[in-house]
Amino acid sequence: MQSAKLSSLGSDTRTNRIIILLLSAGFAALLFAAGVAFYVQRQNEEDARMVAHSLAVEANLGAYASAAERMETARRGLILTQNASFARIMDEAERNTRTQLRNLAKLIRDNPEQIARTETLRGHLDTYSEHYRATLGLRGSGRERLLADFANDRGVLEIRASRRVVEAMLVEEVRLLREREARQLRTQRLFTWTLVATGLLLLAVAAATLVLVRRNLVDLRTSRAELRRLNENLEEAVDARTAELKRANAEIQRFAYIVSHDLRSPLVNVMGFTAELETARKAIAAYLAKGDADGWSAPDPATRLAIEEDLPESIGFIRSSTQKMDRLINAILNLSRQGRRTLAPERLDLVSVVRGIVDSLQHRIDESGTTVTVGTLPTIVNDRVAVEQILSNLIENALKYLQPGRPGVIDISGGSDLGRAWIAVTDNGRGIEARDHDRVFDLFRRSGVQDQQGEGIGLAHARALAYRLGGNIEIESELGVGSTFRLILPIEWQSGAEDA
Image 1 (cartoon, rainbow, N blue to C red):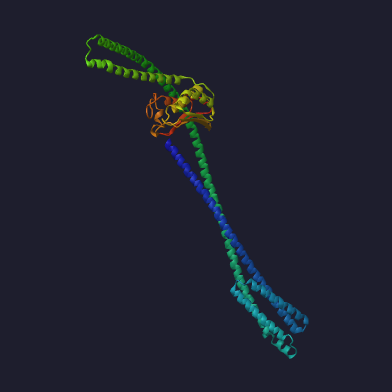
Image 2: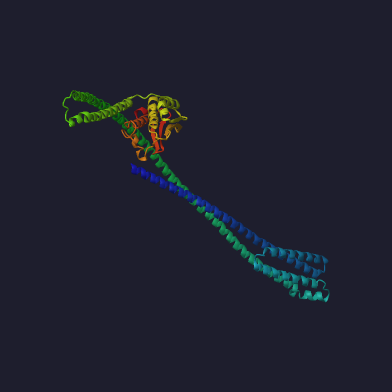
């Protein structure tokens, strides 16, 4: 089952990576398409401008040719009719021709070959104008000779040469126009194919993403169903385990009660016979003392040593051991009774609870010269007796294990967060080594110098009570600096906490 879960997690991770890669590819395709579209648009604008430029050159060449032909027609009319109106038409046509030539020179300034041809046109026009003005006033025989050999007239030859140059320029512009139109067409096709390819790529990415998302959703639904089933099984297992723990806890409590009760009977006998031995020893010692006073013969020194020193020492050891065992049995009986006690939750003002504990310890506090401060504490709903026992144990320990030669300071503070309340008891006492932080909560385990009375049960009992109330006790301590014991409890009473 664990392997299947890990495999499912790995599959989800791979699927998510693939989806991210596909989305990244889609965005990259969009960026690429946008870049190509921008480039193609700029290129298309440039191609359109060049096409329009070629068309403008062609139009200007046509206008120049038309103006030149009109100029030649007016010159011929003037030669044939000698009518002054043709002279005016001739002058107007010449001005128009030169205007068209200047416009043409502006348009073709980026084409060296066309510039050269334009300069050639300009030379033909200048020669033509000079010849026109030279023949303007011809009369009589001069005019007759001009008309007789008009086909070889210098003006006619210049006009014919201009036509050839214009035709060459038109051929070049047509070639450029076709080339630019072809480039514009290629650019448009590139744009179209780019859009098609990008669209297909986006469709493929969308389809793949849709398939993966759908598969992921199916896996999620399957995982949720499996998780729901596992939760149901887990609840059943927890209930069964809780019942087992309840039975085991009850058995342990009964066993502790029975054992401690059964141990008490022989212990009472041992303590009673120890008292009898002490009484007999005192009687023997009195008898020996009386014999010494009456002059009786005293026993040998070894016997006297056994009666006066060895027996009292041995009886003292027996009495101290039985007293310690009696305290341990009482503690076990107390733990057993506490475990069977029914918890009674109520609203507790922890400031009042702590101040009551401090007041009960005020005599010891004054004797030790300890300063105790109680800060702001939360209000909770819990069992008063259990909470008082826990806090009393923590405060008594802080008071018990002060650092000799240093004025004691105990600070009790608290707060709440995320439905949990905490109460911290901080002291500047002896502190606890890091390796003993967990051990101090074990039964019959103590830390540091054993110069204070105790059996090592208090903290174990306090943490057990905290567990039963749905909480815990944490420790922070540094040897020689001090300790902080933090009791953590739910703010509101948790149903079922008593069974924990």
